[in-house]
Image (cartoon, rainbow, N blue to C red; front, side, top):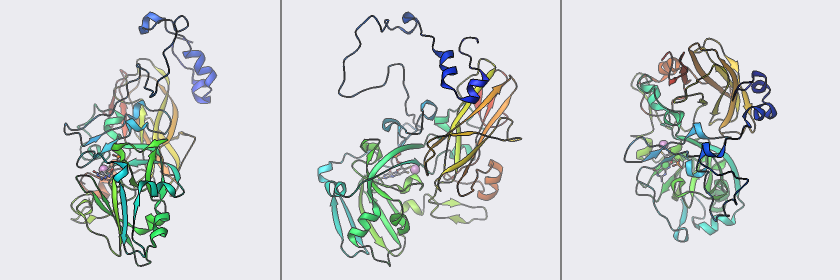
Length: 407
Ligand SMILES: Nc1nc2c(c(=O)[nH]1)N[C@H]1C(S)=C(S)[C@@H](COP(=O)(O)O)O[C@H]1N2
Ligand SMILES: [Mo]
């Protein structure tokens, strides 16, 4: 077997032994600028760890005002996004909130309005769930102008989605505590950032799987994610997951806030608009091979990526290497969790011919990603939100890769 090459059998069987035999060659110390680790004392223990200096995953920004950043999807393994690489989106910056002075008020159509301190929230039985969070604007540029963004990484195309283990108190526990009245149909979630972000949420979500989250991946939730507490609504569009939450008001109708009227509505053909598109539809992206990777050799590669759906579990991902002419089933990597990033992989032989790679995910409700043409028929020219059409990468004969079809 030639240097670094992996056999087709190893890829298909996924056997670790065959793969490690091919890659176990240790670099001579001088090549990497390090000393022979068997001859010098290693470094000391540290209070707070950091990444190997050889690993430099970074979030990227679209605009210099930095109101959002994208997760480096192409650099991640497994399904958890390290908290310091979780995508960020804030309409008025990241506030600094002292947990000692934090409180959450729940009032309106309830029997016993109440203020909860952070300590109060932590006294209730906690729940931990591993779930994705995605901005409804994720990937909108590829819908509106797929030709314009060919030299983009998976991070740039689709990096406004991340997965964490979220820990907190189920909202239904607090609903019972304050005695939410049966007439209550909606609740307002209001933040304490400079945007005073407010959204109306159907009360059923509160009785279902909503939570007030104060933990993320084993520690306190990060300031960027809503420290000390945020509303977390599994599968619902990012913007409804109000961070730095300070108030919940129960009512019999939606509040018609700015973020659900002038923003976050979806225009449809014929001059109509759809309001309250909460659930994020089934979606996927190939994260390898993808721009800026160049395949310098022919041979087998593992096509890898993530799929997710706000409606439940991913049950199937199909891969096309010929621009959607034919499809083959990818392997889903355990664990497959509801409303969570799910890994897929598929062995593919790059034979030096141009190839267009596509992934198409299906969720447990039977929903499948539409093609770009199909989605345009339904949604018209569109604005900025809710685009789950099939994405493509074109591998050229020279092995270079660009985003989009027939590039
Ligand atoms: N208080 C507050 N909550 C907010 C926002 C905000 O600007 N302020 N942005 C929303 C949007 S648009 C998204 S996509 C998600 C992003 O969550 P994250 O920064 O934890 O990834 O938070 C939502 N909650
Ligand atoms: Mo968002």
